[in-house]
Every structure is written in structure tokens, then in C-alpha cells.
Image: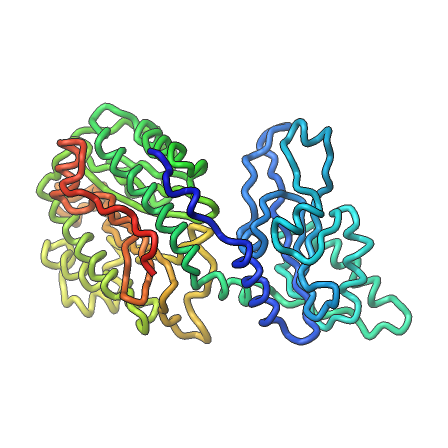
Length: 458
């Protein structure tokens, strides 16, 4: 699939500058923030995993190399944003690819200053002196933790020192900024969701009994890479039959059997932004009566949840809407008995629906941002993006339900952006109704012409 829109999508240098300025504005007087890059991770012996930049660091810099550090120093006369990064090295670049080096990195990222990472011990301690607070995420970067502790101990021991700065966790402040997406971020998320929807459609058209789960995974990954999304946002789940009951199943090694459903949970990462989409469909292309009955309940629950993604509602309202619809549906089918409100209050529905209806989505598939603020559910506002993913899962050995329902796992998940006009389903191009799924699997195409991706939804 050609990526004709890719050249128009991206985050401008000016937006990174605005992000840093907003974070600096939130620091307490006398504060200083330190944000490290990710480290390269050893896979085996002398082979490394593909490098993926730390999301917080990428959000503030757009810089994609390892061994780097961003320091934000409010009030510094020579400039408030400094980068430490690797120097140019012709021999290493011949093996591992080009590096920007400090001078080019400063220009590339719109930063005031950049220094070699090897000079960190000479420069950073001086920046810390006289500061009252250091905003930093302790525990995620142990080597840097130890380095900072040594700097602070030296400050404490210095004659006339007023003591070392207080350490303050940076996550809450920075992640609140990441929670509400800009127009550019929403376009990237829409692109990631569009690529992912096409991948799910492709997998549907190629699904048939006798394939292995990993062969459907291959169809998904082919679509991602062909569209310029080189990595999945998380390990792809292809669970046929009872494997769909395992929430994080990713062995993807079993054969697909006629009469079973297959649950496919897959999303790409496009230019640092994630998609997360799940579709469940019959391996032979036709839902059975029991499968259809359960699927319709899950779909109704998902649509009810999406309708609650409205500005002014709180985070729990979409989940509560899905619980109400699914519980009522399970009672109507005879799989639960009793008063719907009582079953919800007691949590009896969790026998079949045991997870939340969604999570934040952005640079991380489970994106940054608190769900509660001061003990209360967070209020939804335009620019927030989330998944909506209710499900029903009936254990294969649950003798308390009729046999045709046993061993069935169904989840339907879409990526939903809250816009000024209400919820926008970014992954809508992935067939979802029973009629559309069966038509797609039978004919190899959708039952409608999917609208082109909108460049300006917000």
C-alpha cells in the first residue's frame, strides 16, 4: 500500500519548541528538568533490538538517537534548552549509520545549545548548583540515577552549600501535556489507525481454515511495513478458538480451525504514534448462531461506549455504558441471571467481561496520562485519544453456560479521538459489523467504499 500522505505528515520543529516551553512554564521557580533518551537494548550476544526512542524524550525533542540527554534550565541566559548527544565519529558511522552530532542536533531540534555527551560530568553539575528542585523520573534509568546522586552528594559536601536540590518526579507534569494531542499528532494517529485498519481488512480477506495464526500475523505485518510503519506498536495477537481467551496471547503458533473465531489484536506505530485495533471473525467466513449472538452484544456495548466519548463526560462513563449493555445482553441470553443493576454492582458480569473498556492512546499504546485526578475520574476533553474495546470471554470448561457458547472469546476495539464535534473513530475502515465482515471475507473487499482519510478532522 503506497504511503502517499507520508510526506505531509510529521511534527514541525516549532511544535517541539512549544512543548518544551509549556513544560518549562510548569516547573516551580528554581526548578530544572532532566529527560534522558532510551538506551540501546542487547538482544543476544552482540546483536541489539531495533532502537526505539523513549517517548517522553521524543515528545520534547524529535531526536531519534540513543545516548542523549535533554536539560531544561528556566532562566538560563544562554538558552533554556540544552541537549547532550554523541559526537560525530566517521569510523562508527561507517558501521552503524550517520549521527547528527551536537551542532547539527541543535539546529535539527531547534535547541539553544548542544554538547557532547562525554562532557556531561563537566557541565551538568554546574547547572544543578543553586537549583531548588530537579524534575526527573527516578528508577527508569539506573545508571543516570547513580550519576545524579554523585553530583548531588558533591553539591552537599561543597563549602557553603545550601544543600542539594529536592528531587521531584517529572512524569505527572509531562504526561499531562502529552494527554491532549495537537492537530499534527491527531493526523499521525489517524494515519496509524488507517494503516492498521487496512491491515485488518487484508487479514480478513486471506483468512481460511488450515492456515496458522502466524500466517495471519504475516499479512498484518506486510501491510504495516508496506505503508512505512516499520514496527508494530505491540506484539500482534492472533488467537484462534480458545486462544482468544488469553488476553495477551502472542504465541500465534496454532492452526486455524473451521467453526472457530479468530481474535486479531494488532496495531502499527507510525512516526512515533501508535494504533491499537482488534477484530474478531469466523475462520470459515460465517458466524454460527452462538457466535453471532455474543458478537452482537459486544458490538452494541462498544457503540454505546463510543457514544459516551463526549467532552464533559468523565473517563469511566464509556466503560460503564459498555458494562450495562453487555450485562443486559448476557441476561437476555440466559448466561447471567438476576437484576442487571445488581449484577453490575456485585461485579458478577466480570465472569465474562473482566477488563476495562479502554485506555489512552498516543506515542505509547498504553499512553501517558492519569485516569483519575484528585481521586475523581478525569473529565474528557477534545484532543484526547483512547481505545474502546469491550469483550466477552467464556471459558471452555464453564459448564454453567450452554455448550455452544463455551470457548468463545470476542473483543472489538477501535481508536477514538474526541474532537470538538464528538467522537471520531480513526479505525472505522476496518470492517466491524457481521454483514461487513462476512462480505469482506467472501468477496475480498468491504461492502462499502471506505472514505479517504481526512487530513483535517479537528
